[in-house]
Structure formats: C-alpha cells, structure tokens
Length: 190
Image 1 (cartoon, helix red, strand yellow):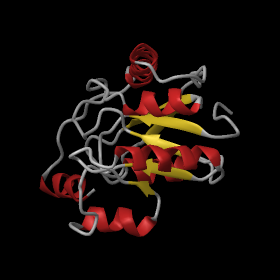
Image 2 (image 1 turned 30 degrees about the horizontal axis):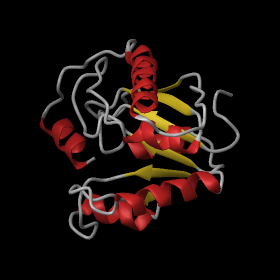
Image 3 (image 1 turned 120 degrees about the vertical axis):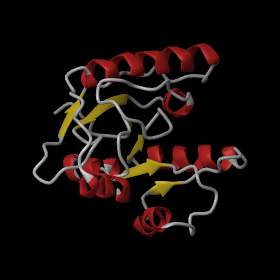
Image 4 (image 1 turned 135 degrees about the vertical axis):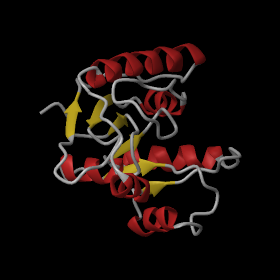
C-alpha cells in the first residue's frame, strides 16, 4: 500500500548479491522493476554479470563514468513508461544490518531530474544467508520529489532525506554471527 501506482525510484540497502531477487519476490510484478548497475564495464565477464544481463532488468553503467548521458536517458525512459527503478545508493555490498554507507548522489539525481517519488526499502536478514533464516522487507513512506532542475542543493537534500528514511527502516535489524563454512560459501555465491 505504500508503493506509488506509477513510476518510482526504489532505494534499498545492499547486504547481498541476492538483494535483487528478494525485491523481485517481495514487490508487485507491475509496474516493471529494473535495477541500476552493476559497476562492471563488461557484462559478459563473471557469472553474476551474465545472470544480470540475461535477466534484461538492468540499466548498466560503466565504472569509469563514460556514457553517463546515455545512462540518464535510459533511466528517463524507464520512468517515462511507468516502470520502477531500484538502486542501492550505497554503491556496494557491506556487512552490518543496522548501518548504511554514505550514499552516492546518483539515485537522488535521477529522482529529482524525473520528479518521481523515492521509496526507501530495507532488506533485513541478508548479511549472512542461512537455510531457514528470516528475511524481512520493510517499505517506507514514499518521499515526494518536486520536479525541477537537479541542482547540487536539491540532489543533496533528497539524498540526505533518503538516507535518514532508510536508516530508520534498518534500525530494527540485528547483526548475526557469521555462519560456518557452508553458510559463508552460500553467502559468497549470492
């Protein structure tokens, strides 16, 4: 009930490579959900990259930041057709259920530029994967965006508001002890 009917930017914390699978399972199938990333320049290298490319649900970008105008156009097209875009604004996976890394400004830039609401989503229970473990997805209130020029000030304010909202959602998380060798392997695979 908290998800807007139309286009939106989903900002989630990033604990595991399995986070996108959890979001696809937890969120409604419509409107479409696409993901921003990954940072690798060549999507044909590595199992995870090939899986992401095969899903056709990614808006890839280059780590050297070449082609950003084309990436911005692709993001605009996602929103123009009424779809949602999911971004982990921390930019990388990290350990710690109740903490967030500083956010990259890209997510806030895209939201302000397109005038779409930002929906903070916390995924809890993914820092170490366990059979029979509990994974919770907490969806926050959408943060409205006033469409306009994506100035440094507007982007910084949206990024800070998103960080605060997501930090409130992950505050109930609990860090788990690292699992044994199989659990570590399972987590690394994802």
